[in-house]
Image (cartoon, rainbow, N blue to C red):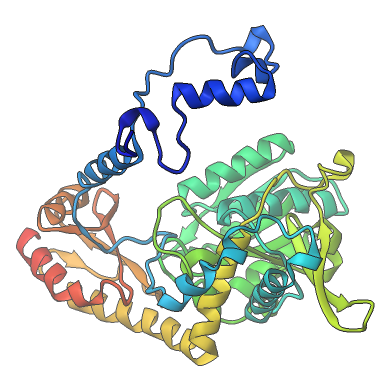
Length: 445
């Protein structure tokens, strides 16, 4: 029987009826079902309705399915950014000792991976200015949720309100609200003024019931928040935690959040090391040393072994469900170690100068594209009189949804975020298509 025969399934795990019967006979079981003790009340007796396919057929079907995707040049952002990932990231991260490793519980067999994660933490410490960073969170949304629950635990006085910008990305707020519901917290918005926080309105909203104030720089609209230090002072005056959302590229060129009074920094570290996947992320989390025992996830620490040689180990696992559930401070049940490794390799490949150069290019590319769009009739760019990084919002005379749809017909994807607001994001990966985008915009506007 050939491996291409459908009845054999995969050539790497062939299970014909005869082979299954032979395995059951070898272990003395009457059937596969006899190997499992599943209570009748929860047994699934129906059929899944999934036709058996060979590995080749599955590959062909998935290829055909993915082939239906529209072939668009994306100028999309709003939290997911496409930066060129050097080939060294794939070559190093795909080594078997990295791919086959889960959580590095056994330091004696995971020194290389643990050191790489320690370096990742060290990079975040340097970028944020805060002394403690973990390795790592699912994404920015879960990192923000963990910040809210941390704030409710460490705040000295009672309170249940978490304040976030009204421009916060919807998915990020949704995850935060899920966390808040389980911790008896409420999430409220404070308004913006020309793309940044309305400091006066925020000051009026903050009182003793607020446990955490969250701000972003860059914001979801790409604007650089100019009042981070003032936001931090407002939060501190009422004993609330100040949390800043950002990403490694932006942090390389902006003021360190610690200098602006941040107690916690969260964000998407997957802007480096990962291709855009619109779902798969890497959450960064850094905080002050006084909150060390409250940090979610895991921390890698450096020490010395019995021979006085430098060694690495997981020094803190605040989840603790697998040891003492009653002491757990987080419900995160895994980590993003391999993804954090990729981010660390990417940052190390760029080096300090390369990372700074990339960030500066993100500023100038956005400026240049906005200026060229502003020269066209029917569009004003940028909408906000602010500095921008990667992306910006533009106001259109015609309905934004109509324009976005017609740009798709020309092969370009942009965000329509309001009736007359479009958002554009440009990085080194789509820069060469800028002329084509402008020509399409001129035609459809």
